[in-house]
Image (cartoon, rainbow, N blue to C red; front, top):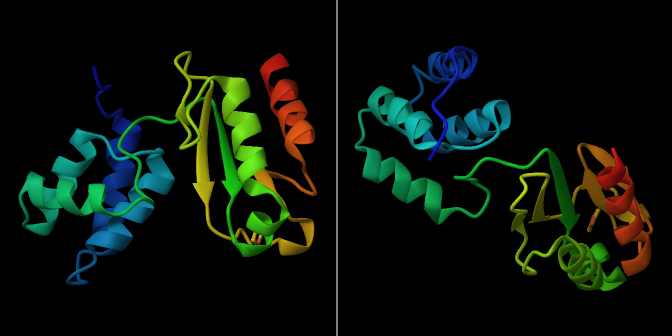
Length: 160
Ligand code: FES
């Protein structure tokens, strides 16, 4: 079952809604900012947003599921973002995906491990192409990877 929003998360969402309250058609930035401040878009979060924007929950849910950038499930303790921009793709991002996801027992689309430790996502260019291929773990960039190096990075986080 989905966890309810904490007071702190509710306040964060209220802050985002307040910021965009005068702006019509700001649903996408509201969803983006909510996700970045509370981690993912729970049903409770989507309800609050729907109410504030004068839309139904199913309309807002429809938008959130349409765009791949939005997460509707909680993220794991460690967030692993594997870059699939052009430079990283050419440098072997697919191999890194296969190696990391295989090591964690996830399908190559990524997702969250059953123990809630890791979430793996594919992202577009993160702006560090000279370090390609790259993955970002908990906001820290690990560059010039190959399949084995990427797996070793993950192993270090597993020991923590
Ligand atoms: S393509 Fe991966 S950092 Fe630019």
